[in-house]
Length: 356
Image (cartoon, rainbow, N blue to C red; front, side, top):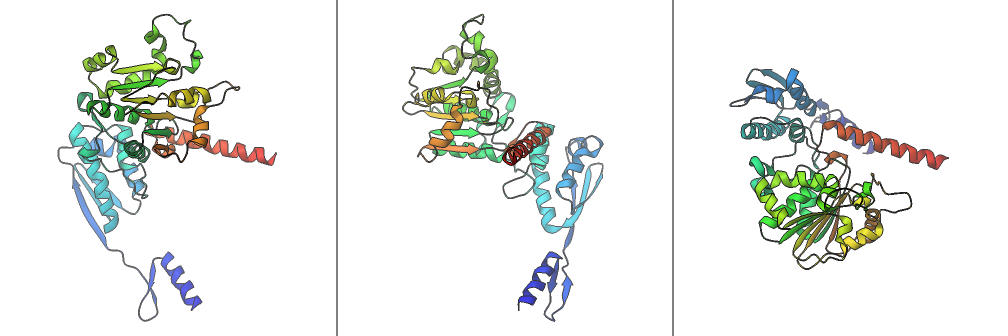
């Protein structure tokens, strides 16, 4: 009996099955063909320069044969694989028809980015998943699994910590959630802050008013807001303190009611600073804290508050932690490989230190 089970296990690995007569015979996979017509779509947007994009699609479906001729893309493979490919290309074609072109990063998200189920495409979000309709027709929506988790956590918790490497869109999606809450009148104002580490939080020696002093440190927040709110409307919000962008040092002594509060680069807030920030939370307010605990720029004598919060605030009802990884990076595709290389080097360094 054991021998029979062993033979069955080995046969399954070789794509064989045991028929009623006791013989192993090859499984016959049903192949199917399909032709995609690139109607109202530039073949260059699908195939890429020198067919680079087509090669990237093919790498995700190694069992499928691709033949591209003008506005016809013929594929042949197992029915299950072809169905998955249809889903991927449908999302890509829809994006091209709506926008006329697809950036390299967006192409990689649609075609190459892995999903939790191990597939190759991240399906297009439905209209219900669009957080903000921004300037110039931009639709801001979660673009990776980590951002989807941030959105889900923010719906169920008043305080969310989003921790992960640069380029994963932590701050961008947090700003989108804040703008959405403001537009839907869930809050009356948005407060965005960031530690000005390079100036040591001592900004007095810099020329200009407070806004001019801290603008270089807060520019990423302005950029995100500019994508989501029309220029004139954004100016009105800023002039009337509906949206405030301030350095962390200016948060002391305030109580923030009916506000959506975001701290960016929280890894560079000390333990006392982050405690001060978290205790500003007032009635009917929400907070998102974002940071990358692998890029702490504090002086050696000071400890990061972001590391402390992950130790002591886990498990408190109403507080959620979302961990993003290199697979969530939405910048240039090389950023993922760069982060992975650094992570591998850090792991090797830890192994070497233990041996020593």
